[in-house]
Length: 109
Length: 286
Length: 140
Image (cartoon, rainbow over all chains, first blue to last red; front, top):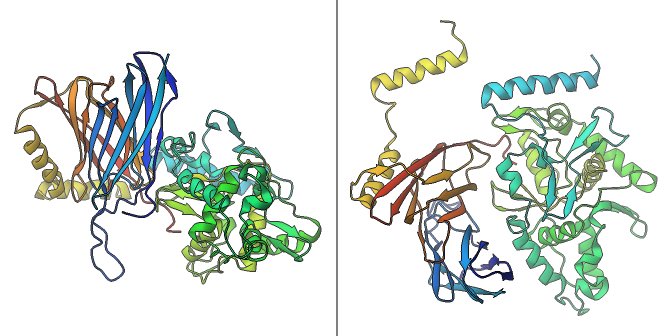
């Protein structure tokens, strides 16, 4: 597992049924592009988050394939419809096989 | 021509040059900064009386593009907060032979609100002007009996970012008189001394030419109220002494070391040029 | 014509264009190759697809962009001046109302950011935005 990787998400705690909400996500990750060289001139191997998925109660909101052109500490902002109370699941997939997950509950009134 | 008018003439030329080059804004823009919809940041105010050649002081935020400015409006969008959160954990974690954490003496990190604003500050017991970094290492060495941190190392810059974050919105107000005065005078001397093969002083860029283009970039007043700063360029938090070092190096000079008496004095002087601006760090710059 | 710096530069680029050297850089066709692979060579029309990016980026390391693709099932982003043009591929799920996303990307130099959206009926839309990437004044 790459060091210092920590997911962060910002989701409202409450919403009304069927409301559209804004979600922001960020994961601390260096996103080594595979284009850089170290001091000895050797290419530093690519090591990135290559996929990000956001679901709500098992239904998909967004599914992103990331390339090395995504900046350090990958950030995504998008919208979601909230049909009922439940849980958002966020998953990031690392080139090294690590999977980082976090979830947020939302109360629909 | 007096120095004052020379500065104004320079700014006017900057406007013309800016339009010709990329039709970008020249000098500070008119935007207001409110962080998280609640922390109002003073990014423009009357210059402190001790500054002779500048009438109004501006945060570096005002010299940045709208896109870069937007990074700082919401803490979630500000990548600095990744490290502020890490520092918050360190704040509450006991370390060293004394078995103490920062919180053991200081309670929550928010109890430090206002501290960033008055540093560098004269320390009576030590008989010297101390930066926040020096004080943090004093705590680590003597109260916690823990290893000191490298002056511009990751742990240190993270902790300074946390202490800045809890002081945001509070006006910078460093003391320059009394026992701090001689250090302040030394810092002022450094500010106006030309260094390096390019023979540039801090003032040549940040007092005479703020608002003008330096290659494709806008020169700010070099205020440090936004430090530590997350730079888009290197995607990490940058300490103020690391920035000083970069500037002096760019004049093609041998630089002073981070934490050296020269940079401590310069930090006090430059901080005092921003007295009245809000503490804004950790900020986002290009 | 008076020989100002600007005019000399204009002359220079005219000469380049005349000799064919001013044509698309190799990397641009690399992006077009990838786009053709994605669309299977199908026509790409304009539509509601919109890409928003700064006209001038203060640093190419972190350029905020926004793509809005109403009615699309998928949108792929390319940067035609990067060593590898692919940037990201975004699929929108059933709980996504706006088919819009913002992210931050790396641009090696001044270039076009191109969005290709695949619509529900299988057709493709294309939109692009040029971003000028500036070089900072100081290395420090």
